[in-house]
Each structure stands twice: as structure tokens, then as C-alpha cells.
Image (cartoon, rainbow, N blue to C red; front, side):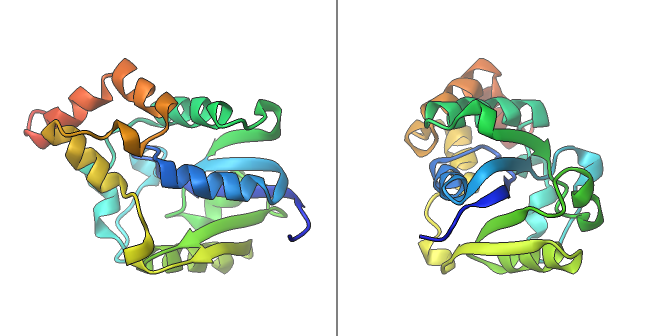
Length: 190
């Protein structure tokens, strides 16, 4: 096993947070003494279309607010056994890489996983501003596993979805009415 780095950074859009996000985050936590967990697309002003994944900026792809994603993430990490004193949740405007150093330490190790052209693009964006990137694993799109788009579609259609997310995330989705919001967007009411 590699030696732990002092400070690490992991990130995700978390629309919503799902079990495969957690596998990635917890793998990153194993590699760092302290972790910053970045939430991408933190608000509409820090979201933009990228040719590597044009759907990332659409309303249906971003039904959860930054605050709601903080709640999902913090509750789910603690539920999984992460020490609350060993991580911080921050905005992570990946579409504007020059801003990343304003939200996360420049000298950190930026952990990521790659499954598709968007993963390659994120690595390129972070390295373009001099950030140290460590790819935890690179796999094909077929090996990706859980996809938040599928979860949102299942919620919208009233299908079973809760087994795809941590229990704490499912609770936040119900508590904040995110499930109803997703159905409303899907039906053209949102």
C-alpha cells in the first residue's frame, strides 16, 4: 500500500450521491490523512457545458442544491465510518479550473477515477493548472457501475432506487422532497 499523503481531495457532482461515489471517496480517504471533498456544479454560475459531457449542465442532471448535496455527503460519510474531524466539504467548480485553488489546497493530492471522456477531461483540467492528480483507477464505461442518471430516471418513474444510494442519502432525498422535485422536472412541472 502506498504511503498516505497529508492532504487529499476527491470530488463529484452527486446528483445524487450513490454507492459507487462512496467507494471512490472511501478509497481516497484510505490514501490521505485529511480529505477535502469537493462538490462540482455547486451552483448555476459555476456550471458550464463541456463537450466531453454536454448533459452535465442540464436541469434534469442537477436537481439537488449544493446544500442538499452537503447533507447527503456529510451524513453518508459519517454513516460509513468517516471521522468528521478528518474531512471538509467544499465547492469544486471543475469547469473553471483556475478557481479550484480558491477552494482546495494547491499542494494537495487530487484523487480521481476515470471511466469515460469526461474523466479524462477532468484530469486534463486539473493538471492544466498545476494540480497533482493521482488516478485511483481507470476503467471502461461498461465497468462504471452505478450512474446517477439511472437513479434519477428510476426516481422519476417511481421505480426502486434506494438500494443504489447510501441509506443516509435516501433519507435526505425523501426529507428534502428531492424525489418529488425530480418527478416534477421529469413530468415538465419543474
